[in-house]
Length: 84
Image 1 (cartoon, rainbow, N blue to C red):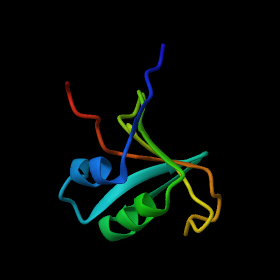
Image 2 (cartoon, rainbow, N blue to C red):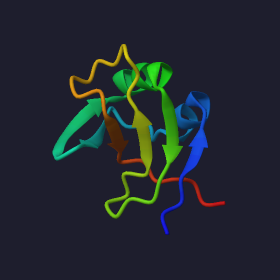
Image 3 (cartoon, rainbow, N blue to C red):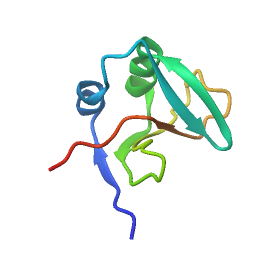
Image 4 (cartoon, rainbow, N blue to C red):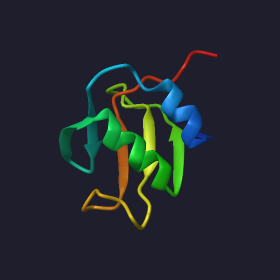
């Protein structure tokens, strides 16, 4: 069973790796996003959660209405959820 844990934008920003670009999957599209754009998206998100992803894209964002992403769907970033 897949576990989903809702988190805040602040928690997600803290967990972002210190890379210039981070890979993202949205539907069947994969692309690299720069860190600043991810932070903007996190601040506009409807919901943010840790999910279990087979490709380690564990940070999931349900895009908000002002999203810069044209699909306005779920964005999954290549950020591993922290071990608890």
